[in-house]
Length: 72
Image 1 (cartoon, one colour):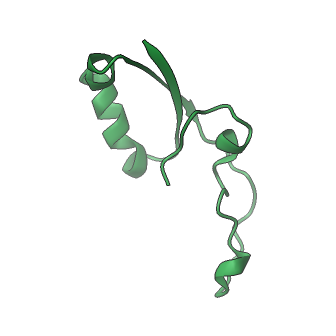
Image 2 (cartoon, helix red, strand yellow):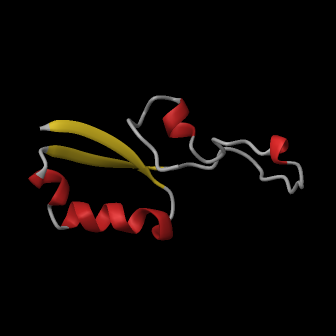
């Protein structure tokens, strides 16, 4: 099986992945799916300028190569 690691960062966004895992859909495709919990990566600053937004805020595990993928 191919090992894939993704992060969990809230029920709304992670629920489809967790249901797929629980119903064996990853295993049926030959994927050994594992999850790590996202950890906070800083304070969110309110801004009206899109250039001020950190695109990986809350996705530190991806930046640290602890996960193979993250949902964008």
